[in-house]
Amino acid sequence: MSSNKKSSLNQFWDTLLNDRRVQDQLDSVGYFFLSTQKKDDVFQISEFAEIANSTREARLLTKFDHQSDLPQILKTKKLSVISVSNTDYIVSHVNPFFTLETKIQPPKYIDPKLNRLIDPLNFSTEKDGITVAFNSGIFTNFLGEKVELSINGRFGYDKHRHDKTGGKYYSKYFPNVPLTIGNTQIEVDASFENDHFVALVEANDANKIAPISFNLRQLYYPLREFRLRDNLLKFSTSRSIRPIYMNTHNHFLTLFELESTNELEIESFKLVRQVDYKFKDPDFENKLRQAYNSSNQIVPQDGQKKPIVFPQADKVISLLLPLLSKFENPQSTKNVADLLGYEYRQGQYYANALAYIGLVDVSKRSGQNIYTLSTLGKKYVLDRDDFAVASHLVTLPVFREMIKQVLENHSLPDLDRIKEEIKLKENSNLNATTIHRRAQTVKAILSWVLNQLLN
Image (tube, rainbow, N blue to C red):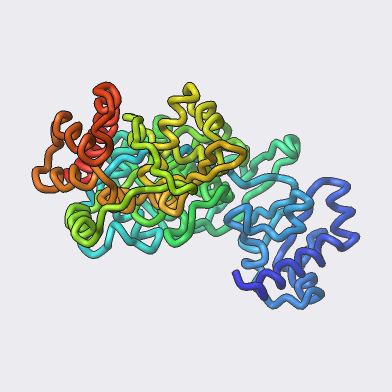
């Protein structure tokens, strides 16, 4: 949003909420109504827009898909805006935003089949993301049953049609005051159904980083509408409605399943589960070969120009995302050990392993190592970019030669061959136990590389 648009938006809300009549209404009952039309006991949007010299449409003055979109004065006063019809809005302390408590976890790899006209590794719209996900079987995998594409697009919620509650819903902030959904426009990004359930999908913009929170109106109003429609069908009593929020970013997707514990209360949603999916890169092997041929071996060094200890942490690659999430802030060796629940020495092994493969940087502070996410580490956390990590591995001693063999044979070198390479490239005076442990770590990381090739 441009600074001019932000300024216009803030001016409107500052003017409105600083009006004595509006403040008195908030103080007396805790909410007030806004409308694009002139009505008794309802504040008119155009009146305040004119005072604030705002020329923005009413829809743009009142539409906030994410909590971060709210003007500062709404955040300060802890107020939100919910549309209750195509012309009317309620401003109150109701919190319509759901905070996504995302987990950092390894993704499921999916073959991006049947998407010949859409690049699954670089789609740019919500619709493309949904299409690729459906054709690739992601929704079937996530929902646990085969589903068919159902209705989507824009339509209206009509409280007078079939809703026996008359469109009423409640808020925990006003438990005794029924709020009302009138004739309001609803937009559904996608829905899927079978004889057992209807899955209702709200998708995030594929060009944006996943938001921390989103407006529940995007799922709650369609849920109410879908319930009305489903009540007309023969299996109305047995079908559940499963609200799904879908984040798309680059070539991976995250699906969140929510549950409404009370369909008459807008704040009743809770998170049931989260699954991350990533599309396999069919060109991964060719790109890794090119990276190998165009690179040279380097020796990683820490801030004092001493070689970082060769990795001795065989689970480092399988725990990559959970491990890296611990380094959002700089961590000492002791902090790393405590965060992982390891002894000090084992924590040091894992932190140094991440440093060796280039995912964290090491500096010295008060005589101890301090670890922070490197540029590569940040990229991996943000984009789940397996190739970026693999292409860095081919520049490291031992890994470079071993990955070359993996590329040539499509199989893992045996442990004895890895030990020979460690003796040659690292230190021939290492004892047998140390070499064995380090070889196990190398083999685990090579297994991850091989998995990318075979996938």
